Every structure is written in structure tokens, then in C-alpha cells.
Image (tube, rainbow, N blue to C red; front, side, top):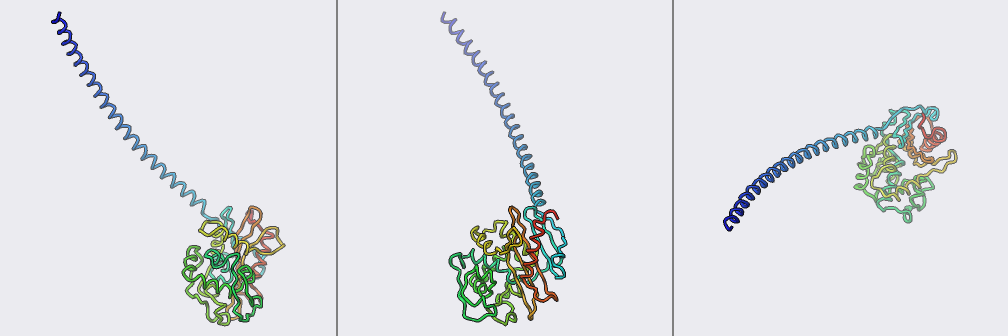
Length: 330
């Protein structure tokens, strides 16, 4: 009996080992197969990722190209001669809604000239942004010098100085801001030739009075009418880092009192003289009605007409706004 039991145990042991070995073999085969499957999956995943990355790159490139195409502005020439009559000049209009420029007299629109007092738009914004002036505290004190414009012979804040275009006030403000700030900001704004090298201005101009001269007054700084529009639209349409409250204050001080058109007009005139003659006349700004907005520049060069000033340019702009806004269907 004992021999039979021993024999059975040996057979079971031997058979079990054989089965176990076979089972381990199959397990090893399955493991190898699994490894191969894993490697194949990893290879497929890597290839798939490469394809996906390439696809993403293609899509990104296509999107970038689409944006570039979308951002490319449309430029068309228009005839506004009826508003200028026989006064030489140009007008540039930019509609940000459809990124379209409408230009009257394209050659003049690309010609750089002194910005004159239209530069007060920039110096006001920078004065607010750097804290040289605030809504509550912006008074500058009159030196006591008697100027030819009697409205300038008093203390005043930036709002009054802007509206009566007081040169001595802005001469003080720009000196307080200093060359480094002005240069940095003009580069950021891509403001014309960005040249402030003649900081004190044209010493032969404005009776050689340092209070009435500067780089922006028939001196080193130059900008074209088209560039004026581009700078203004950047300030109000893009994020250049300026505080929203300062942009709003600038807009408020630029608002023009007029009753010939139902919309609103914002802007600043500028008039430049050389040898007693008016050689540059500007009105730079923005027209706004309901949800439509158009940036503009009217520029008038030296002409045989007497009495042509920035106010003339302003009147032309208002006439055009009253009859031609928003310029989409022309």
C-alpha cells in the first residue's frame, strides 16, 4: 500500500512539474507577445504624436496666415475735393471695424511734417500716465510774461491748456517728463521719425522764445497724416499698457463742441509757422456715432490762401463727418 501511494505521489509530482513548466512557457510566450504589442503601440503612439504635432504646426501656420491676411488693412483712394474746394490738402480716414483706410491725396498723406500742437494729444496722455498731471492736480503757474495770445496769460490746468492750445504749459510739462520718457514712448508708438534731438526746438522760431518752442514745433520731430491716424488708433484700439482711466481722460479733453452732426468728434488742431507764414495745419482725431468709429487726419500744407490754420482743417473734418460718415459704402 505504501509503495502504491509513493508511486502516485511521484507521478503527480512529475506530471505537475511538466504542466507547470508548460504553463510557465505559455506565460512567457504571452509576456513576450505583450511586450511586442506594447512596443508596437508605443511606436504607433509616437508616430501618431508626430503626425498630430505636424498637423498642429500646419494648423497654427494656417491660422497665423489667416490672421495676417485678416489683419492686412484695405487702402482705397477717395475723392473729397468738394470739401477742400481749392485748398490743397489731404485726409486720411481709418475704420477699425473693417480695417479700411480711405485716403484723399495719397502722396501728401505719406509726407512727414511737423505735428505742431496736434502733439498735445501725446504729451497729455504721457503726462497723465506718468503722474505729471492728474484730473485733480494739473495747474501750472504763469510766469508773468505777456504772450501775444491773451488767453495764455494766467495759471491753468491741463484741460484748459489743451483746449486753448497753450504752448508754454506743454513746454513745462514735456520738460518735466524728460527726454528718456519721451524717446521711449515715441518708439513704442512708432510716432513718425521719433526724432526729439532738437529738444529746445527751432531757436529762430516764435520770436526765439524758449517757452514757445520745442522739437514738435517746426523742428526735428516729423510725422505723416497716415501715421497720425495709426498712432491714434493704436492708443484707443490696442493695449499698449496705458491705463484705461488715462485714455478716457484723454478722450474727454479731446471732445469737440459742435452741433452740425449728431455724432461726437474728438480731436486736436495744430498750426505751424515759418518766417511768419503758416506752413502746416492739422486736425487729428476720431469720429464716433453709436457703435461706429472712424479715426482721421486732415492736413493742409502751405498755400496761397491766407488765414489757413488748424481751425480750417477742423471745419473741413466736421463738414465731412456730417455728410460722409461712416464711409463704409463709398
